[in-house]
Image (cartoon, rainbow, N blue to C red):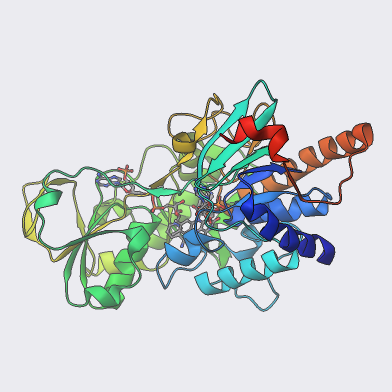
Length: 423
Ligand SMILES: Cc1cc2nc3c(=O)[nH]c(=O)nc-3n(C[C@H](O)[C@H](O)[C@H](O)COP(=O)(O)OP(=O)(O)OC[C@H]3O[C@@H](n4cnc5c(N)ncnc54)[C@H](O)[C@@H]3O)c2cc1C
Ligand SMILES: NC(=O)C1=CN([C@@H]2O[C@H](COP(=O)(O)OP(=O)(O)OC[C@H]3O[C@@H](n4cnc5c(N)ncnc54)[C@H](OP(=O)(O)O)[C@@H]3O)[C@@H](O)[C@H]2O)C=CC1
Ligand SMILES: O=C(O)C(=O)Cc1c[nH]c2ccccc12
């Protein structure tokens, strides 16, 4: 492990000068949980790699684009990475800071040293060469394998709400929301009722703001726990034995019993059950961590869809008009793969694999995807193990065939060999 790390460090300075870099193993794009988990699994298989990260830190979503009081909403056993679990003393639902510190220790344990500030602009398979050509703002990386680990939540979704440009107060997406402290005593319109919209509304309440939550559609809200066990864990366990629709019926029965019928507080349930809906459309149920009781007490006001935003507030579909100081867009995220990955048929126009879980991890021509399963960190762990196993096998075959010396991570291309590639 140590020697691998030292070697990467030594290489770092030389290769910074080169315009064109041959990577002796896969190129991983993104140093979030998916990139880190895959790196560790590759190291475990004895495969070197290079990991390119556009920001200056690992797990930038968690470090820079999440709010202060965020906790994992699935219990820790469903969120840990392969080969090295959470420390024993972590609580059942680790805080954001604990999760970040876990990822930092994980990276250091496996000697993971991402190339920071390397934003991948294009990646394309060169049929003539038989390699992937990955361009960042500084240089080009070339490899047999490309692993896409840029995440389902790469960019915020900012919808065009009529009139929003006229609004005189602050408009902020949840990716830039840190704490309700900045909204004390304000009337805040929260647009979007996924987990972010619900949790931000709760946080606003705790800071004496007055949130109005826009619920334009149907949504499943489930308690985070049932009978002292996580709802997610119960669902996973039941699905081993019972058909999906029966499990959904059970979850709804318990949810209605413990939370009451959410229709009564303006939150209509979809006709399809929560797990079936997640599988079919990818829409994650909201796991309630306290917002619902504030909706019941009237501290969080549920509003119908927005018709238009005015200079000082909003008009709603049901004819109501209200004044607001700020607007928070809790309207979700999207993949950025279509922006930079060229010439691959593997992804939809929304940047998600066309092949559904559990088979979406492997594409064609040495292309892999990790963390695009719609199943959070559990999906990431499953992809990472499979990808590393698959590449590990190819790696050993190539090594045996060509008798390549494998003691270096990155082989610098001699400019004379590949000058034409680097133009
Ligand atoms: C608020 C919030 C809470 C969540 N909570 C949970 C939870 O409790 N449990 C759970 O299982 N999941 C949760 N998720 C889902 C979340 O997607 C995963 O936890 C996890 O972050 C996914 O990891 P990832 O590495 O696939 O993507 P990301 O964490 O998004 O990491 C992708 C990395 O790629 C980098 N990148 C992007 N584009 C480029 C490029 N062109 N070039 C180079 N680098 C690039 C980014 O900077 C980033 O560092 C949550 C998501 C959000 C938004
Ligand atoms: N504690 C935790 O672990 C947390 C986890 N997360 C996870 O992060 C991921 C992202 O969650 P989140 O940010 O909530 O995004 P989601 O995509 O889950 O939710 C976005 C919401 O915005 C609504 N919306 C979108 N556009 C508009 C519009 N123009 N007008 C009104 N409503 C609109 C959608 O409604 P519609 O259905 O009508 O399109 C939907 O309710 C999820 O996987 C989630 O589980 C998020 C927060 C906390
Ligand atoms: O937190 C997320 O975004 C997740 O995707 C975790 C998750 C995967 N499957 C689920 C089913 C119900 C609730 C959360 C999840």
